[in-house]
Length: 485
Ligand code: F0G
Image (cartoon, rainbow, N blue to C red; front, side, top):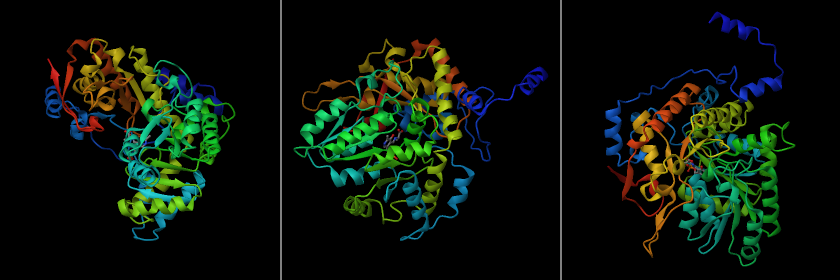
């Protein structure tokens, strides 16, 4: 013990760059925060977990959170707010009209995004409802690198078609490339040549980072070029900005010319290419609730969006949020841009990914910003897609370690064709372990890795699944299964 301490004391002094590199690789490193408040979690006994998951219809969404030990269902609204954010909560101005807290968010968005108009909403999908409801007409095609499921849902609800223009490599979980969220610009141009002319494309959207293919980033070059093409055809270019700060971090780390720029500078450049954004503040603004549409300078669009906002969310200056929520967003938008915070967050995802990789778990590479994605088809080759291998893995993860992940495979993205009765199977069969922001330590990550080691040794105990209930859209939230034993 004393020798170890001495070794540390004898470390040569490091340059700033070396220290940062150590941070990235978690050498002589700990989380850049200390814990002021704790929330107890408990690993319920194995027999209890068996019963709980059966009662939940083998769907992790139906579990009580208190029955979960490490909750990696989502990184959305599950982050830990800082002491500064909590302090700001007390400054919340709860006025119906003209609240000071609203102007703080508006100023932050003007400062970071460079956008003049703010349409607040209670979360990201509500912002999508406002934007899509204002702009999308039946029969149109909405273009995106890859729609998130609620985004896709809103396109469909407006009787339009969501079109994903991700480059082919973005679908290949084993292809190592720095920006697998990039849009295929040739496909974009081909769509616009037809769609801009005849009015069948309302706008183009870029999701940063691209959640649906694993939190993969989009390069600044791709964003700039996609926006240029979109503008050439006279259409607007929007961001789905839920994880924009994580995207900017990857640009700083991976794209030439950005290594010495601050995350904020990168963000401001990125948003300068667009005309607006929707954002779920529950991600990179590190708050438990909130979202918005931000619009660069189209006042007519702002007024149109406001109509729907007032109808569905609330008046312009609160949009479904309490003043205290708006305060937390204004503070969180800046915290989400902090270098140490992002280095730690994305470093923790990498830490988990590297350790899972060491024990042979097939993962999507490179690791995304907000979590690791496990290739369940590869890990469980004996379970055919019709028996829901990724869902089966999430069940086992809960049974083995009280860990809750989420299935992104046949349950989430498959469907039965209503005309032919034929089953459609998605290409990817993934389990996402989304890491909440500032919530778990590397020790929790170690427990996850140990649980996987146990699962690998005992694969034969994993059961195939049969779907016994499914709604027509977004079935993974409420589907129910039985185990085939
Ligand atoms: N866009 C993206 C890229 C998202 O990841 C999400 C939510 C939304 C929009 C919708 O935002 O939840 O505030 O209504 N993603 C969460 C997830 C739910 O778990 O990935 P919301």
